[in-house]
Length: 329
Image (cartoon, rainbow, N blue to C red; front, side, top):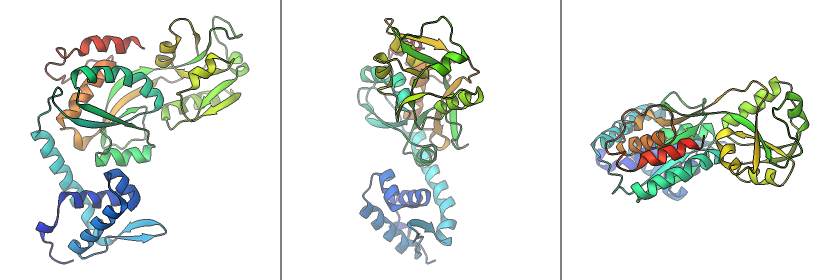
């Protein structure tokens, strides 16, 4: 490898190197960096010239790192982490004046619970803050959080990397939800009742919902599924006009059940609690803006005391919103 002229190396090239390493694809790396594929290809050409090595070789559609790239990856990744940390510690975050987009990962059912209240808080207290919410698989999420593409993830996510820190967000449980005029009408649901109902079944990437499948299998209950959906968005509306049932977190069910439109039943089988947490990558722990938003989220929704609450948060009117958020559950 030839002598490297540091004057020819910029931070964006190193970020591109790490993105290609993590995703093994120029297209995906471009998507993560919000660059076109030609721009990523150009960056890779410059990297190859700088280090006098191919760095990544295409094999069966995958960009495979060379030995030189393997030697470079850890030092470059560590260097970027040091730079990010230094910038985060130096920066000052004023929510009333800051203009920034935070990127969050959560399921559509978490969106229903979190976003109406969170956006109410941000609209009045941080008017120039924007949110970009996405749904990612665990594998995609690990990479996206490490690269800084995602600032926070909300959910039951036991598959996340140990590099991610977390705090309890809220605890929830699943219930069975039917319309108020449903012919099934009893004070307490039994296991036999579960087997006589027909269901709207939501197949999502949400790990938490997989707990329901496991619990039903363990109890020997077979789902009688009338409709499969990829998301929860329309499921509640469907059971409002049919004799179908829906298994859904209590926090969401109680919100929709206000006014007596639906009936909710505790499940008569052993069900684990849904332990929802807020996750962020350790390399961005010093980011003052992320710390502020994390505290806002915890203040609005968590029953646990919030440590390190930013000064002035009460004056920003969060307390009233916090009460509203907690009542949902």
